[in-house]
Structure formats: structure tokens, C-alpha cells
Amino acid sequence: MNANIETLMYQLGQAFMVPVMAAVAVLFLYAFYALGAFAVQAWQRRGGITDGPGYPLLAYARAHPGHRDDDLDLAAHKMMENARIATRVAPMLGLVATMIPMGPALKSLADGNLASVSHNLTVAFSAVILALIAASITFYIVSVRRRWLAEEMAWIQSRRPVSTSAVSAAPLPQGSPA
Image (tube, rainbow, N blue to C red; front, top):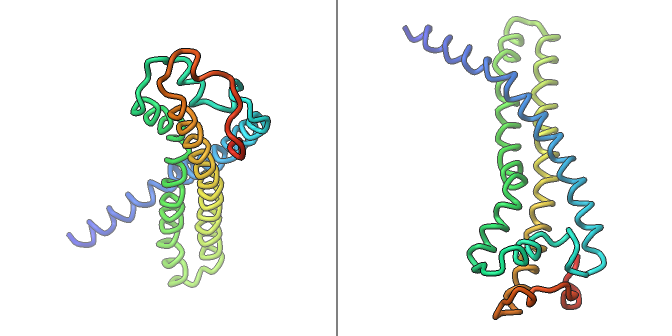
């Protein structure tokens, strides 16, 4: 009975290898997509004029003239949600992708099959490296965007009471754009 449970758990763990590796690959690709979008946004923000697409929270405030501070906070969280999730999930999936091939690697080591040990360890460490690179990229993006959105929110709140024209295309205070 105990051997059956162990075998079932082993097989179930091995069944997750392909989906976890696919998820790590998707997160890795997403990190570079997000990096490109981040670079475009940084380029758009370099002038400091707030009427461009590099200032999404200001655009939200202009589009929703009766907004509350909570609405801005919620919009900012939505804007960063995918990158924040990638930042947190990628290392976990990297760990899972490292641990799954360890079982077969240890079994191959016990059987004296060093080629299989090498293959399994290569898969394990490659997956965790890609996951950590993806997490590092998205962490940087989230950190800088959080500051950008906080600057935009402070700028919007400093112009209260808000009318539809109060959040205009005026430049941000010195030192704020990037």
C-alpha cells in the first residue's frame, strides 16, 4: 500500500514536468515582452510632458474625471498585475522545475547511469536559470513602474480639486519623469 502511494506521487510529480517547463518558457518570453514595453514607456516618458502614452495613470484620470483616489490605486494595481504575478510565480516554478528531475537523476545515479543523471540535472538547472532571469527582469520593471505610478498619483492628487481640465497636459515637477 505504501509503495503504491509513493509510486502514484512520483508519477503525478513527473506528469507536471511538461506543464511547468512550458510555464517557465512562457514567463521567460513574457519577461522580454514586458521589458520591451517598459523600454517604450521609458522612451515616451523622457520628455516629461504628461499628455503622452507613457503616463497611463494620468490618461486614466483624464478619462474618468470623477475618479476617487481608490480608483487610481486600483487602476495602478491593474496596470502592474501581470508583471507582479510573473515576478512571484517564476521563482516558484523554477524551483518546481528543478525538483521534478531530481528524482529521476537520483534514481539514475543509483543505477550507475551517469548520462541520465547529467541530462536530468541539465534540465533542472536550465529551468531554474530561465525562471530566475524572468523574475529578475519583471522585478526591475515592477519596481520602476511602481515609482512612476506613485509619481503620477501624487501629481494628480496635488492638483485637487479635480475638474476635467485640472489634470491637463502640463509638465510634471522637476525630477519626476524617469
